[in-house]
Structure formats: C-alpha cells, structure tokens
Length: 178
Image (cartoon, rainbow, N blue to C red; front, side, top):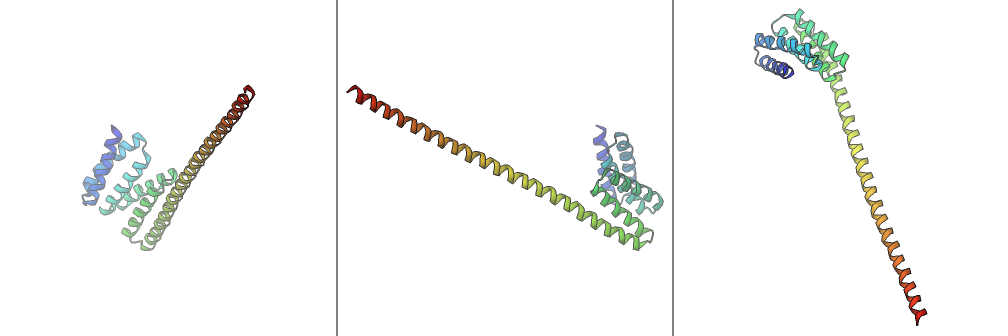
C-alpha cells in the first residue's frame, strides 16, 4: 500500500534526522513527500516537510529549509492541525536561530507555548465532555433501572390486590352457597 510506504519513509526520515544522518533523511523525506502529495495525506505531508526542513537547517541550506517550513505552516493552518502547526512553528524558531535572528526565534518559541496551551485546553475540554456524557448516560441508565424496578413493584402490588379481590369474591361465593 502506497500510504504505508510513504508513512514508513517519513518514519525512517525521522530516525535518520535523530541520528544526524541528514543526507539519508533528505532521501526518505523526498520519497515521502512525493507519495504523500500524490495521495493527498496532508497531515503526514506536513510532518515530512517539517522533518526535511530540520535536516536542511542542519545542512545550513536555510533558504530551502524556510520554504519547507513555510509550506508546513501554511498546510497546518489551512487544515487546522494545531499539533502540526506547533511543530512547524518550533522548526521556524530553529531556522530563525540558525539565521541569527534570536529575538524572532524567542517570539516563535513563545507562540509554540501558546499553541501547546491551546492543544491542552482542547484536549481537556474534549475529555471533560466525554466524562460528562458518560456520567449523564450512567445516570439515565440508573434512572431507567429504578423506574423498571418501581414498575415491577407496582405490578406485584396490583397482582396482590387482584388476588385479595379474588379471595374475597371466593369467600363471598362460598358464603352464598352455604
């Protein structure tokens, strides 16, 4: 499957980047980017651009790195992929530091903190909503069980009353026969 091959290439590129094998990293990134573009797998494509950008920074090919990181930022913002936007912003901060623009690099790192907070807030909100839904569901299930039990008790009580009435009717019929 082409998607799995592209994902594997991206993963291998990440490994090569961490091992500082930048040329090999670029080969895997190029293969991944080509396939991911063709497959239109945007979120993985963003990651491949970021990885290639970081390798290019390490190789001091800053203009090429900037193009990749800007592309990653553009795609992540367009697709509203905040985690990828945070990674791309972090890579842009590395690029600015490599260019000697430390003030802007610092500003970008502050922005990554804001994006982290936003991601955490969304995650926390999602978890709170899931817990609230689970609580409400369990509460309704308990109410249903309670109502079912109450209904059974009423049915048993009604059946008891019917038996009492039948018993009294039998008793009356027996008295009339005597």
